[in-house]
Length: 281
Image (tube, rainbow, N blue to C red):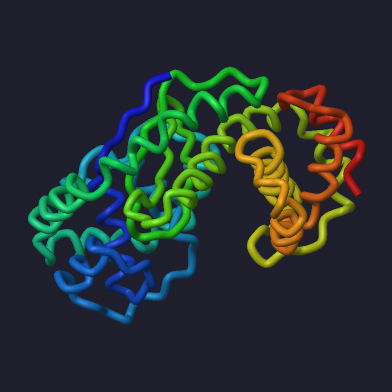
């Protein structure tokens, strides 16, 4: 599987425009530079998740016309609908802030800062792929995103992209976020064939602040449980404490971990997911 590290002018433009409207970002060399280079305007309300705008921007052919690619899937159309009202402001921001020069400077900063952290990714690709009974993608594009602490997976028709903050000073956090987002690729493929079985357990769902529906919340619980048990298990000395900590955010992780360990599941596919769902409570 080919891993390709890229800069994204469109991603940087999206977050720079958001920053100009008061969007809060982690402090690092790039965000500090951007904050000094742009003009702050409080007149624009941000009523969508930042990932919606990023998907929208990544689907734009070029920044001269802001024309979208022709082939759009259901998720593309949904995210575009939510973020489209902000695009005129992004266009205006692009023209007024000498953005090409800004991005050139950012690329120079990235080049000097993220090389060592890129190396953390390669050993994890094989490990994550090995625990899912789903065919791995031909390739994955990794884009540095210094504007968030976490990461995001974008699955398009002809490419898959993971955005992750490679300027993060904590190596373990970079490793965990990559494992989490890359696992979502396999989890998403697996869920496509098991919609009914997953929906049968929706009565267990209790409204969560960060997740609006059952399937997405269960996906987060499953991914974290797989990382905890099969990809990056913690030392025995902190096992219980770490699981207890995770359960505060992921209500079903204990049930999933218990199913994986009780049935000695080594890889996760349809058969294993059925076992996990059966044990879920």
